[in-house]
Structures are given as structure tokens and as C-alpha cells.
Image 1 (cartoon, rainbow, N blue to C red):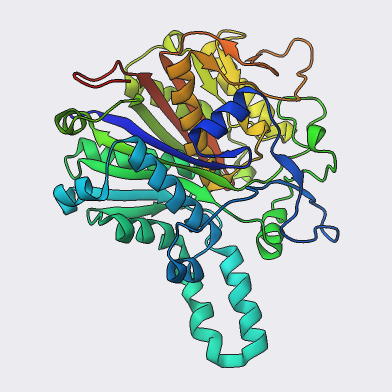
Image 2 (cartoon, helix red, strand yellow):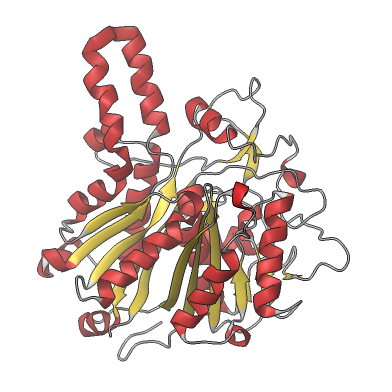
Length: 414
């Protein structure tokens, strides 16, 4: 059975655009959460977010820019970087069998900002803008479609809509395609951008968001002061390839192997049955064929809601034991990025493998006796040969991905 490996990464995040800027800021513990600036949040209960500031969409063709949303612009920029990082030019892609090149991405917001803009046009211009407004219905597939068109990737394409778990579910789907022989390369991951008035109101309905006004203590997962999460925008796109195909084309590097993946769904609350995050983790480890003691770092979901933090703490402690594995949540710097979160945490995990540095969780002070070995404030130097990335999506979605480091491929330089 073929192995799925990550050969290229691209990032757009609240703490930096591009992998070098993102990783430098993350290791420095730089906070990307601040008062919302894209609109006046004074009339809303949520006033802070992790915004991607100064993003330049000049690389997106004007017609595409006008017909798509900010989340798609993020994905196109990240995909450009990921393909370049993988050593793939437009000519390289054109030389490969087009139906063996696929796209699977995650989406959560579904074009909320674009929809708001079109609704405002409907109010101003009347029925003649209804057609444009109705086009919002296809926005869940817009990012995948634009990536497919831009790079000529005509293989099996899809979109995953499992909220914060989506980025990991997309990578799991990409791995499945490669293992079944339906593709040799999949552009995968997720981006999101829901920081518009309509998008924010839709998110506020879950009643899990922080109303804090001070960036340094608004989002504090695993902390007794936790009172909800801060939303964010951005994400990551990754090039996932069949290992043999990557070797055959002379890929310049392999960051990691996707060795395990699992997803579960929580039972309805009224059933009083326990959440299934622990099962997702156990299934992913079993899929990878490893024992818990082989995991060197866990990238936590870190909801910031006390009851949900407790569920995750119990799941991780049950699987690994108390203080048995370093746990980190670099999303404390960016906020929760919804469909972009799992993909960005995956990038953080492969960079931790590359540099033997586990990035920090910032501003959090867990209570005495907390069973997790949280990496706090400063990066921790340690070899990371295997990492677990965990994500949960609103509505009961759980996903877990196991990554293994891969030595430099034959004939390639790191």
C-alpha cells in the first residue's frame, strides 16, 4: 500500500504570511489576536479575533478576486507557496497525468462575507442581483474548484465541511485517495475567513466564544480563567503525494508521512453518552500501528471552553497517562481558525519535527495538578519523530492525524 507524504507547505495566518514568517512568530510566542479591525465590532459581544493583517491578494486574478471570498484568496496564496516548496512549477504539473492530480480542502464559513456583500447588493439593486446572491450556494466548493482550475488538477476533487475538524479530515481524505491509487498528488488542507458582521453573528450562535477585550487573556484553554475561544482566519495548504511518485520526480524534501488518521462523531447531548475524542485518538494510533508511548508531541484542539477542555484533558490523559507526553496549542496565538486550524497545526507539527522544537502555548496558566504536560510560553527543544494532531468541530466532529518524520529522500537535499 502506498504511503502518503507531505512534500510542500504554505501558510496564511494571523501571526505571519508564509512559512518562515509564521514559524518565527510562533516560536517567539507572538500574539496575533487583537481588536477586530475589518469592521467596527463595538456593537457585538465578540470584539477580538486573529486577523490576517496586510494580506496582499495581488496574485489572485482580478476576475477570480471579485467572484470569490477571502478564504479562497488565502488558499490560492498558500497553494502557490506549497507547490513552490514542493519544487513543482506549472510546467511540472502540466507534464503529469492531469487526472492523477486532485484537490481536497475543508470549508466552514461557506463564503459568509461574499454572501453578506451580495445580500447588500440585493437590497440596493433589487431582484436583478438575486442570481449573484444565489451563487453563494456553491461557495462550499469554491476553494477546491479554484485550486483545481488554477493548477489544472482534474482528478477526484472534494470539499469537507466538518468545521474545525475539517483540515484534518481533508488530509485524511487525501491520504485515502493516494492509498487507493486514485491519485499521485493531492493539494489539501483548509483556510477560512469568517470575520465579517454576518460571519461573526453566525459564529456567536454557538455561545462558545470569548467576550474578553484584552488579547492576552481572552483565549485561555486548559486554564481556570477560560471563558471561550477567540475566532481567527487563515490556514494552510499542503502538497500530499504518493511517496514513490514523489521520489520518482525528485521531490526536494519530504516533511512527514501521514501514518494514521481517524474520525468519530459525538452522540447527541441528550443521550448522556460520553464524547468520542478518545476513540478518535486511539483509532488513529492503531491505524498508524503504534503505541501511545511512541508519540513525542500532541497538538491539542484546545477549545477554551471549560467543559470541552476537560473532555480533551480526560481523553489525552486516558490514552497517554498524566504528564507522559508534551502537549501544545500554538493556536493560542492565532485564535481558532475553523477549517484552517487542523491544517495549520499539521504544518506546526512537521516544522517541530524538522527543527526538534515544540512550539509554545502562550498566556495559559493551568491549575495545580493539571495532568497535561503543557509546553508553556517558550518552545521546548526535543526530538519529534512522531506527532499527534487533534481537532474537534462544532456539532460533534472529532479527528486525529498521526505524523511520522521521514529522512531526506534519496538524492534530495533537505
